Image 1 (cartoon, one colour):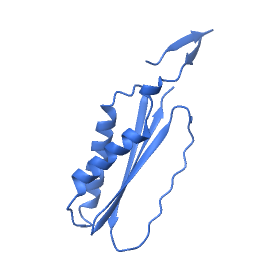
Image 2: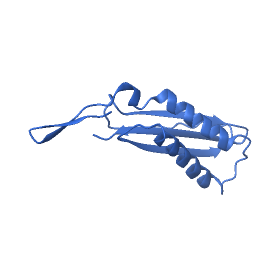
Image 3: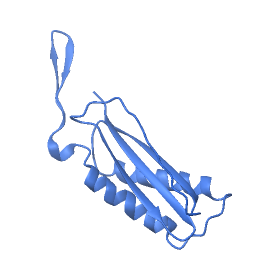
Image 4: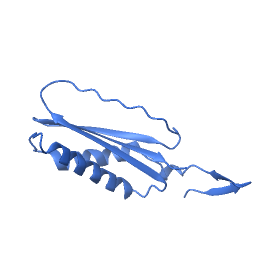
Length: 125
């Protein structure tokens, strides 16, 4: 449980206990399962990708919220593209507290599509 104390009118927030922090290994499992459930056996079609991205990101965010991580804000990004044998590189830069904030990512591939999903957990002080 997060504790907040007042020192001379200024809030003093302590970091969450270890079991209540954003754990990339657990989040990576969630992302991988959602990607597999939604995209296994799916054939690429450009008209459907925005809907798939929205559905996948909403489901990942919903599952992250059920983990019970108090005071965390989640950002989920999903990219889906056609598998044509080309390489794709993605990157991100974030300004955050390394003691509490983290991210997880997972990649899904089949014969016709690739998908990359990243989830960021940012602790709200």
